[in-house]
Length: 509
Ligand SMILES: *Cc1c(COP(=O)(O)O)cnc(C)c1O
Image (tube, rainbow, N blue to C red; front, top):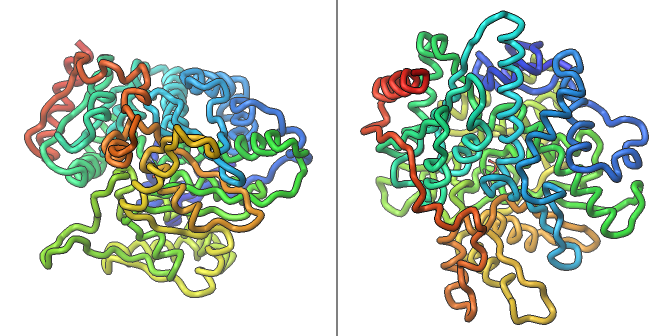
């Protein structure tokens, strides 16, 4: 199995290179050269497998044995999911008839990004060690990323203490939630460096991009990326679609080959989580449809409704110069969804049947997004997209309404649940798109205690609600713990470079 760039260059690189590069040199994203098919008899052979064993079977289809021997891959997987608190890693919970949630928040930072980043951290360390051994060197890499909250903490927990890897995570000072800030800055391992930058998340992101583009700096420090464009993150997320499918069949006492209609509802920002579902479906998992759930930042919902992918200015005043609403589900406050480019490639490819033509089309579309703030696909392509996807947009009021409606500790005819605001966006979408005879599985992307503002607002009138009852022990006292963080007085690449060089000198001394 080799990998290619969505924009056409290169057309054949190894899995290891794709993971280590993150982004392709031509600005595109890496995709596998073909989507692997499942082994004969997969429903019965996969039916009873644990999360880890299933991950091994799926990853093996995408990672050649010559690059990572199966036994090594197994060790990497076991190490990655041993940090999860739940024995089945990602349990499926029944909410009511035909509605389930897949709890993806049992990892170290209580958000679904742990599923991918615990694995990516171990994978980075493994690939680096292997390369160093082969070349007789002791090369180091510097992982650099910007975060508005969840990615940063998951990356830090995935990479803390890893050999020969220094990690620099930029967050906008004072603009991430107190719990998220504490999760990141209370990790005291010497290879972890938090930079609290004066500015916005976009400023941090631009600075990171500038440093990746700085050839001299990049080649000196061997920069590595952990953002959601990394192929290994998508790969790691495919597992839980399969795992939840079999959990559902088992809980309904159905046979491996049972014919049921399942819709997955996915709270979406950067299109990474739902893209993994698309791969699962294309591999042959019988998913009826993927329901893409957005908050008020609905560019993807508008695409699946009209075929137009267009940034629009938001805000009430005439001089509004932002494209993003600040919502109660901040991890989905995104305008341009980076992983969407991968789906666009498949759509363009399906239309022409030619890989290089698909890449040219994607390149032109992405240029349109850059120049004209949008792209438009024709009806044929929109129809192809609609075979796999449907979409729905949910505002903050509806999100709060969902959280309060499912919390009912006194009710005898409904089990009480507390959803985080991102999951609630998914549940709201599921309710709106409910269909006779279709079982819906909503991906629960974060633990409610992580997003206290929305949960407390929604439940402020609930008679007996006390936020402390949902607080995991790991969060108790977290805000008072010792922190290590460097303040940076502006999102200036020169300034950030100085800090990185100084911190690395200190780390090595
Ligand atoms: C990142 C994140 C999302 C969005 O996932 P994408 O892969 O970017 O679509 C949703 N919910 C939570 C809690 C997240 O952290």
